[in-house]
Amino acid sequence: MSSFSGGPKVGQRMKLYRNSGTTDTPIWQEISEIGDTTLDGMELGTAELKRRASVWIKVLAALFSAFNLNTRLVHGLGGTNFTALRTDYFARTAREYACCNGPIDADGTEGFRFAALLTQFPWDQPLEDVSGHDVVMTHAYYEDEEGDEVDPSWLVVEGSS
Amino acid sequence: MGVQDLVERLESNQPQGPVPIRKMAGVQVTADEIREAIAANPNHPLAWVFGQAVEGQPGDTKLYCDRADILGLATNRAVRSRRHMVDDELHLSKELGPSLAKPAAAPATFSTQFASPEASAAEVPAHSPRTRRPKTGSVESAEPDAGEQVEPPAN
Image (cartoon, rainbow over all chains, first blue to last red; front, side, top):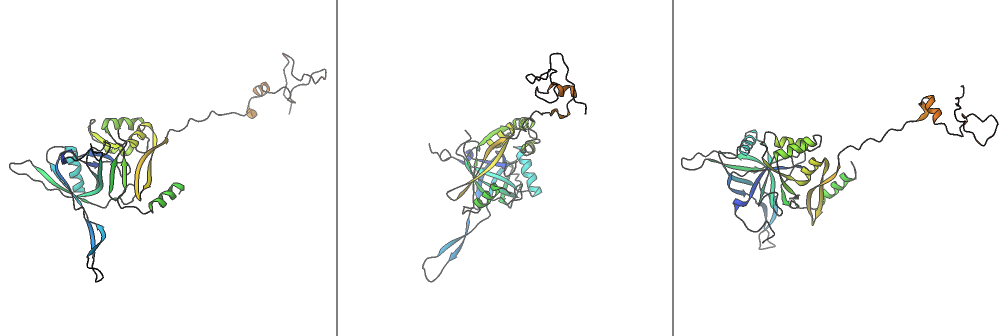
């Protein structure tokens, strides 16, 4: 069995967490009543280098694009998380999230930790389908409790067992 | 500003990738367990962080935190953030520090300077000038005879 996150797996086995603590002392709460989830827009901006001295167009690394996490939040389940997300949306509050490939208390789990604003919180009410919200979380400016800017980080779980 | 602050500043200026690696020993705890830890050590620096995280939450709500954080709260020990470089990558982790319990005060010692005359007399050693010399003038024994009371000098 692969040591990297227990091998390949479907998205249903992966986890999304919301930080209800602080940057230095995170306390993660799982957001489980969600469907398809995508960490979108993970792009590196580039500048093209073209000159007579070379027949090749080459790129130079610029900035990382503002990325989004898109997820389908089922309406009517997970009241605590729904209330927290709704409150953050209307209050325009940025919060940290962790998009992981497994449980955050299991050795070997890895994920992407970032701060985001809820920029879209629509409400679908189809006649013959489950009502829900296609939530979009966009990477946002965020400061920790000491006033220092917080950048995204790669989360690695080890020492849990 | 101490040496640790200098070390952190120097390490933070080293070439590193833009995405640090945060190491976490994740453990699952319930809201009730967190409340019990807060009740055991309400003055711990992390008590307020955990308290506001479980506010309004049902007791069986599952939450996940770093082992060092919750263990530090439960055992009243300091929790430190550790930064170290691995192959030009900044790794961040937590570790437990010493106990935050205040050491018990040492028992007080008292000087005989302000003690009562009776107590001072009882503590006077045999060679003290306050001891009466024997009537025979002998210096072999300067201790008062049994039953004989030693009077303090009249100053």
